[in-house]
Amino acid sequence: MTDIKDTNVHFHQELEELERKVLSMVDRAEQMVDMAVEAVTTDDVDLAAEVIERDNGIDQTYLEVHQDWTALMARNQPMGSDLRRMTSLIQLNVTFERMGDQCVNIAKIAQFNAGLPRVERICEQIREMRDLVRPMIRTAIEAYVRADLDEARLLPAMDHPVDRLNANMYKETVAVRDNPKLLEWATKMLMVSRALERVGDQAVDFAEQTAYLITGEWVEFDEEGLARVLNDSDD
Amino acid sequence: MTNETSTEETVTSPAGDVPVPRIERAASSPAVNSVPNVIETRGMSVFYGDFLAVADVSLDFAKNQISALIGPSGCGKSTVLRSLNRMNDLVPTARTVGEVHYHGENIYAEGIDPVRVRRTIGMVFQKPNPFPKSIHDNIAWGAKVNGFKGNKTDMEGLVEEALRAAALWDEVKDKLADSGYSLSGGQQQRLCIARAIATKPDVILMDEPCSSLDPIATLRIEELMLELKENYSIIIVTHNMQQAARVSDKTAFFNVKLDDTGMRTGRLVEYSPTDQLFTSPREKDTEDYITGRFG
Image (tube, rainbow over all chains, first blue to last red; front, side, top):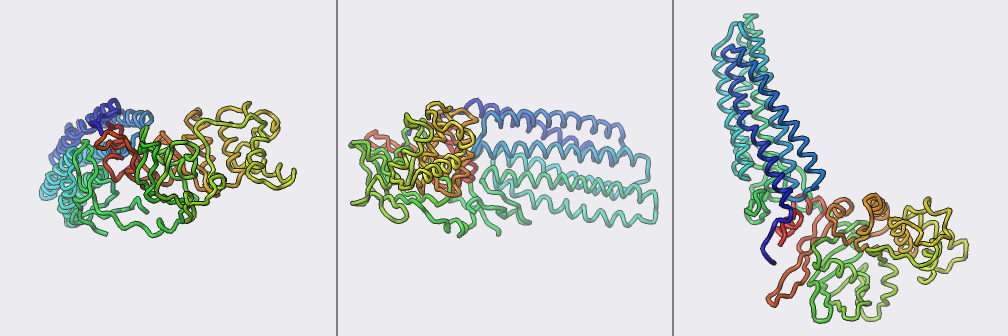
């Protein structure tokens, strides 16, 4: 055979452009997580408002990507790794949009909780969760960009401490049950904890999508990051 | 099931050409192998004179399934198809070696009547080729030539049955005496399918049956194929990958290989369930072809 040449150049260029557009949301998602946690742990209602405003930008990009993706799909009907890359991109687009929504949920709680009495220990725990979740987003995206299966498989282990802290938050909330004002604040912080835990889960889900992109197998990571094949196309 | 990755088997990375690990697959379901085969080729090669057009093809075609043969021009897919019912015998220089078993019987064995082979393994061609006769006679004449023994009523029944099976009856029932040429291209192709069906074949070979049809007529033929596979086994050659993806159960990808002397010979690269071949092909050549990276 002669040298391989790409006879589908325009499609691949458009696919790369679309990919760049989706990946442009990474930094914004990370910053929104930072800002939302800062707002809710410092009673900064202005910062909370900025998070809500920034989510409009994420939503706008999400819609543009969705439209571009649909057009690209209709015009090119990709197959093989191109098809898997397209399905991963639309999943990543949804992932960022949902991460933005979780940040908005946290920001709204920041606005609600402002002025209420607080427990610094709970705020510390929320910041700790942020410090764990943020690298999960980065690792999941880098695994995708580098098509690195080993890196994708790191995600479940990174998610464990987040889950543990989220579970512990119930105990912290119950501990303030005798103080109605504190309980009201802590119950909302339980929802913040849950939102951060969901962001972590979304990063794990995307890492599984990345494993599909790389291997062609639908997998669900187990606790050690090993893959369980969900269905086998030979069936 | 928990699996470590294996680095033995590789596919192409999204970046293009970096081998990446595959997660080990579960063993194939036994149910896959329980579908009986209608045609099996074993080490089949086809020559045109001294030219080796396609080499060493071993394929199993399952009963009541649609099997697609795809690949670039010159890869030998049509040659393979025409060898499955000895249509290549009509090409003076063509020579087929190896074996082609139809329900276990080698159709190239001595004493096998190629006409009988073509009756049970019918064929529909790229360009609709109705006879210069009426719509009715296109069906009736083919059936008579192939030994139909019934009376006039039986023949009318056969014509209607074949036209219904080809999803053409409602469109032509009031003009059966009109020429077959009066029909549109898509209708002519369905007439040819009806003509093939009227000889009561077991297998229908289709050689790019939609290549001269518009998208709507193409969709009608594809719908028809999906209906026909309940009663027939279909093997289709198509240059339209989306068509293979839409209609077939299994797909064989052929490619052209250059030997040391510069001879271009078709080879079977991969034969997989269609869903797998078009989403996660096993072979890099297949991946390159279906994503448009092709030398």
